[in-house]
Amino acid sequence: MEKKTWLCPNCNCNYDNMIIEHSLIDTLGRKVMAYTLQDLQCEKCSEIKMENLNAYCSCAGNYTTVMHKNDMMSYLKIFQAIANYYDMTLLKQILQQYLD
Image 1: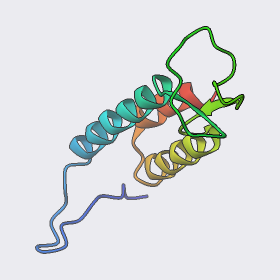
Image 2: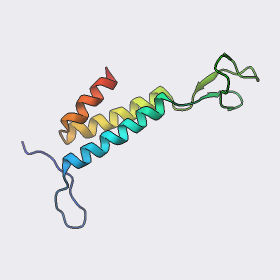
Image 3: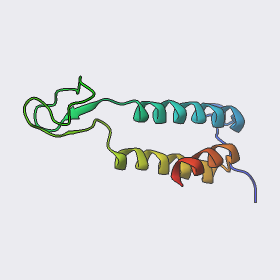
C-alpha cells in the first residue's frame, strides 16, 4: 500500500510528511500544555479563580476548567485520525501516551 501524502493544491506536488508531522507534534504539545495549565473558572459568574485555597467562588459557585476534558479528547482523536491516515509513526506514539 502506498503511503499517503499531502498535496499542494496549486502544483499538485507532494509536501514533506515529516515536516508536517513535526508541525502537528508541536501544535499538539502546545494544546496539551494549554490544557494542563489552564485556569479554573466559576460556573456561576465566570470569574477566574485567583486564590489557590478557595474551594468555591465568592458567589458560592463551583470552579470548573475552561476547556473541558471531552473537548481535549475530541482534539486528540482528530490528531489520531490524521496520524493513522498519513501513517505518522512518531505522532501516533506521542498520542498513545496521552490516550492511555
